[in-house]
Length: 153
Length: 119
Image 1 (cartoon, rainbow over the protein chains, first blue to last red):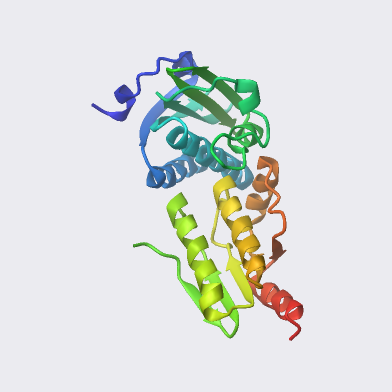
Image 2 (image 1 turned 90 degrees about the vertical axis):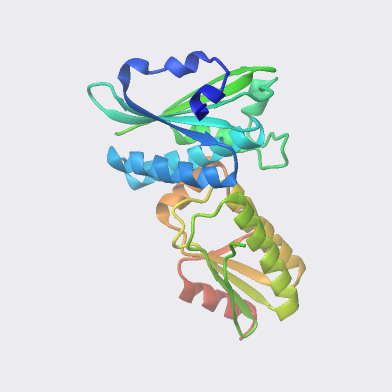
């Protein structure tokens, strides 16, 4: 069983931008070291579509925050890395999925400085500012999915 | 176990982070630095992050905490060499590294520590 099928949370976000998807690779997220691997893979994809250095850094940083959330709060899961092309521009899409407890109060979780994990509370709110598209689907007791996209300007 | 080396120069400690740190490695560095400040009687800590192409909230917090712990232990911390793209991302993320002194490069960081330590 690979990581993609191991994650059971059935989210509509799996099909977000599906028509624009050129390629999808899935990485399991189980522990700290997986976040390092994820950052490397995201960086490679950002470079491949010639994102500026600042945009690469923003996307990789968002990936690091969200990947950590998946592991720390979601109890592990996976990240789907998508190469996107809408005919005019290329982009990198990331979808983080876990089977964790879900987020009971999403508005609160998206507020700067709010944390249940003893962190800085910037993971979700901060990541949102670093990307062009940001969507969350979460159901209590089922899991959480966070989709982000960075487009080449 | 994987560790980031800490060099001693007089009463200063020098750290150059050259690997992409996972969270446990960052925590180990924080612990090691705090221990070394006490065991070496260090008055200053210089952390070179010029090789880091990312500082996320975890690494940022580790840096802030290290500086705060050093201060309580009577040592000053200077973080040097942050890449411009990292600085832009850090601020947009919402991190300000409150209470952390910075300098553009190792040379300027050393000068800043020297000045603050009255040398």
